[in-house]
Amino acid sequence: MPIRITNLCKEYNGKPVLSHLNLTLESHTNTVLMGPSGCGKTTLLHILLGLTLPDAGEIIGMPAKKSAVFQENRLCEQFSVLANIRLVTGKSIPLSEICRHLSAVGLGEKHLLSQPVEEFSGGMKRRLAIVRAVLADSDIILLDEPFKGMDSATKLLVMDYFRTCTAGKTTLLVTHDETEADYLRARCISLYPPADNTSYT
Amino acid sequence: MISIMKQSNHNNSKINFLSKAGAVIAALAFWQIAAMRIHQKILLVSPWEVFLRLTTIWQVKGFVSSIGFTFGHIVLGFVLGLVSGMLFAFLASRFSLVDTLLWPWVVTIKSVPVASFVIICLIWLSAGNLSVFISFLIVFPVVYQNLLTGLRSTDPKMQEMAKIFRLPWYRKLLFISLPQLEPYLLSACSLSIGMSWKAGVAAEIIGTPDGSIGQMLYYAKIYLDTDDLLAWTVIIVLISICFEKLFVFCLKRLFALLYRI
Image: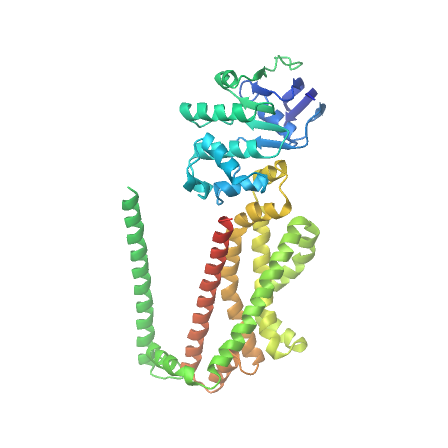
């Protein structure tokens, strides 16, 4: 069932961020949301996640089981990689499966599994946040610039992983980078609010 | 680069330790000179005489049992204050009414002098249990206010993450709340242990329960045994510091174990 967003409005301190947005997100499809800074991409993601209430509008068909990669990593820094994954998955996924996912994003070395996340670099934390979101039991994954801060080789590796693991799943990814949308072979939505704020292209 | 930084840190801590040791030696020398100049043991006993008394004071009848009595009572009061302070802080973080209702009690406990409490409580409680209650009274507001501050400053972004991933309450507590509370809990314990010993012993001096350190101090005051008075004071300070260090060490180990889940 597709997710239908109708006439969605949101403003902060009297300044409209989203104005009468109409959008349909196809289910079981990777969708990439693009647009200039400040056009409301993150606000839309937060509304879809249920973290922000819209001023007006309707969202129909949003699944209850959600997973996310936030703009910040939001990991439990003092805990190990395994503990951060188990935090969201519980014991439902076997260790071998977790290791397979971590290896796919270049975090497969055995000693890393028990290492506190606070000792990781920014890029490693980002990759872990992506694996956590992919492994969490969910019907939709929402990602806010998930590949930022990665070098090009790592980015390709992680995008390959993401494309493979999310095939057939509903995902919505926010990015500034058009090449990411091309590489992920995702449906692309550009969020360019018109000057009169009446509708989006 | 890292080894140079480590070497520099090591040198700094060495200099810090040496400067503190120097300050202690200077203070002891000042005390010794003052005691020699006054030359009246009742007024001021020298540090050397206190040291000599410390080497023999363990032979005093009831030395171990009085330490055991005071230690047991003050630690019991501390544990009661710690547990109830934590419990009420959790409740107050969830229900602001609890904080509002506790506010006059916490303010009163913090501002009323310990001696007033001791005298009031002597009417209700036996002298033997007084130090437990006074120790509890001193620890409770410190733990309660520190933990409440910690709970209120929990990162909302982590709470959002917990909400999205539908984490059960016990995982939120273990993975999000407890790590953020660690510094608040450590500082509350470190601060309140010293305070509970000061107040607990003061309560014992006023209540003079049989077989307590407070009674020993009281007798030392009555018989003008200044060396006994100071020797017992040194013992109290040493026990208080050792207990504080041990407790904080155990708490840190517990957190380290938690992080290895």
